Length: 286
Picture 1: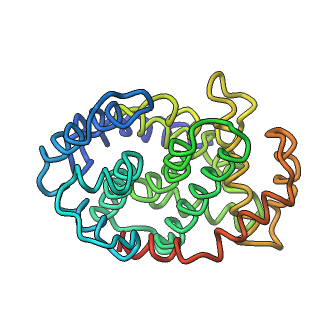
Picture 2: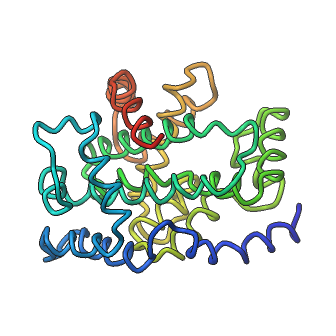
């Protein structure tokens, strides 16, 4: 195991707080205002985001894109929040922040950014649907967790491209799951890396913890139901994307843990996969 490498990497992660394309304080305040039970108004959210004019411009650009299909153009963030919902504005801000992190770095040759976002968004959609089907967690929160669940892979690729490539090659050559290759390579998986970065961004525990434990939900000290939903959503997404791959066995194992019928889950996921939503989401980030 590459202990010296991983320790050096871990020491870097909190400093990624300064690499967001907007102030971390803005992000923290936004999450407080858009969380369940918040009394913040649409105008309050608009005021928070207007502190960064560039962010406001990008939000309005995305809100008016074909992906959302609004009947009339929205010209202010409060109006966009009213039409799309507080949770959707939050997800737009996060997706923008994570996407723009990659503009500063050369990605490894084998890292397909479009495929990365397709999988993130697909897992997000499945997690939201599973939350509705099981009454586990908050559907909007679980969509956000799905959108972020593999951010540790992305962070590794941009900050440690040679290590990401070595892990990728190991997983392929030994026919291992990525998380197994990561553990063998340096004793830590991408879920922990992602959670450390999200925590440094001051994101709340109900988002950070399911990211942290999405490969081992049974070990989660809190938010175990949400972790299990995201774990299942991730495996279902992989199973739909690669029907001949090894993930169907994991789906069979996880479905009883969240008390849901496997056939029902796979049918719902296949319908989501065949929709145009995934491709349209990729376009708004490109």
